Image 1 (cartoon, one colour):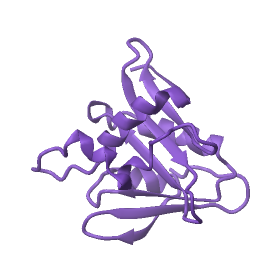
Image 2 (image 1 turned 45 degrees about the horizontal axis):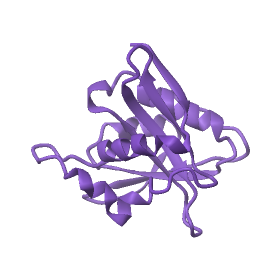
Image 3 (image 1 turned 90 degrees about the horizontal axis):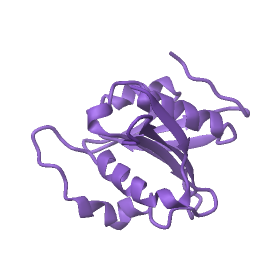
Length: 160
């Protein structure tokens, strides 16, 4: 499958709401969460009013039919908290290299970002992908794994 990765714009806020929904944990054997769950403050902070200074990311679309495939995005927190990366690939397109391509693009575009974190479900196979990009487990609970990527200097690399 051929796909195109492009920078996110403020007009992509609806895309990010969809990707945020796809990023919600879905424990095996349980029903999908309600779509309006992403509007709860703990989740909405990743997307609401997209396009503020410091907001940046990329979206992947199918090159032929423009179908949304995935996105990776970042926004600077209002406080001194560690910035968080949000990331999702549509379920039917996972394990095809799209996630790795999105993360590669984000890492290359943000070499100055010395520390960033993300949260993922504890049973998610994406943990290995994040580890390839230098993320390490910082905290683990029954509900989530918090991973952190710290770099020294202004360049970073992906380990394979």
